[in-house]
Length: 215
Image (cartoon, rainbow, N blue to C red; front, side, top):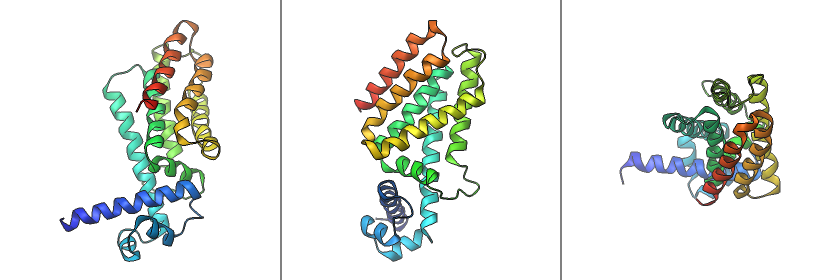
């Protein structure tokens, strides 16, 4: 195996192992020695790629950010109505959390006091922007009430989305998250969407949940 490829695989293994431990035990409660043991690598291999535990945390948050942007771009390319794109975005991010530890650890790091250094944006700021842009589009398309305060709704939606995941982490398995996303949207749709348009989006929430659960 070429040396560069082996090094990339080792780095990915270390990141995944760290994400798994950060997700399950938290940043402060996870030591580098535990990460080395969990990744089945040497300390030398870890320090070759990461000088400190904080560097690992930043690598995880960067991967989470890249994955979130990738989901958003893919949805934009498909030309969905803005509100549908917003709903699909939240379910897409939920899918990332179900499928692997990177997204789950990224959230726990973001809520656990790990400092975010430029050029990396704080995950919640990035999420706020992604949601705000789609809410603006939904307003233009008359899929939400005309008197909606976009900033207030985007802020509340970020809090709702993040809070659902944080509370769920300590109470139920990650596989329950799609159901919680559907519940979240059933509440929000009734407050945001004009009555004639609600059936479409309530049906969409249920369908997106089923799609994730079906794999």
